[in-house]
Image (cartoon, rainbow, N blue to C red; front, side, top):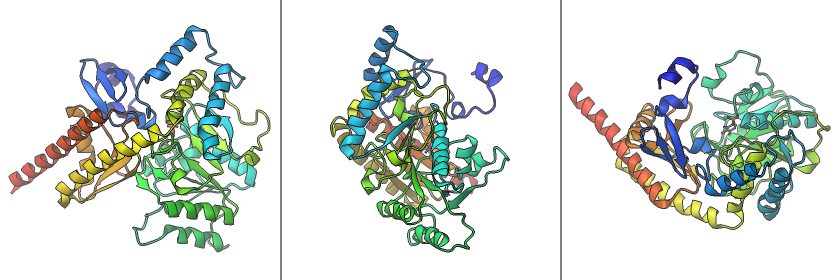
Length: 425
Ligand SMILES: *Cc1c(COP(=O)(O)O)cnc(C)c1O
């Protein structure tokens, strides 16, 4: 660790939560330099939905490299890109009756978000964007402007105008429909809300604390977008790619976003980002939005293989099956420790475990779980939620083993606290 502590910037993050040097990974497991194994319930924050080093992707990439396949090609036409586009259209878009143009941006999520915001502003000729409380959209300046979390917003002091925040679903508790507030602001020309070009949202706020929006709320946002001439951007970077049960996280609500951002797992673990928009929104001039690394050919090769998980219903069924195991176990733990008022929420294989009566406990559990051999992160505005993001392809036995380690961690943290309290008296 000394190499990192001496030479790598203080900005280091996850290395602090999981302070080991990792050398290998396969499926849902990581292995450190001392040959300890860890079960991975974090999956690169949703980048490894198909597991680490998925053999389908690895084999395809090795043979591609050995055949001197194009690795970098700017945004020129390549065989790998053609194969990816054809696979994506035939496997993902066509069966869902979706018609979108594809734009390859720089390879990170925030590049896709910047692109979506810029395109929406160009099309509508307006600058304002509506984003939601606790949303997370990346940390370049435009994406940061639509990100709610104050921890990140504090990092720079430039102007972040042209964004208005509205309350996300459930922001005021279950009894208040947050959209009545948004609607009122749109209807009242003197509300101070500049007419928005677009609305950007996550259907489940991944970094924001696994806040799950309802079908009705999503349909309501879509209806407001149509009524008030705003584009609907769904940021599916974290909870797309199957995470919420179907390829796109919004499918269950039957909405059709105008623009969709994808990154994280779309490249099968390699950097890649993609923006989808309705064909009539393709108003770019050739080369108007450019970048050196648009389309990572090695990621195209990996991704094309992994998209075959969506050739049939098997993966979606497996996710639903594993969701039951995950949810049942978390609810059992929550009811065992009732006095801590633990809330469980999620969909598909993204779940949050929020300890309402003790905000610090989530990070204590994450640390204890790591000691026991489980990698699991926290999220939420004060890190108060333990976040479950196992690979979608995780074996049932490993999922159960990981959940048992989690339960053990909760038990040890709570019994440690209660012992401590007894001593104080
Ligand atoms: C991770 C994430 C981003 C940013 O992606 P980067 O690759 O880190 O730039 C944007 N939106 C959501 C919802 C994310 O989870």
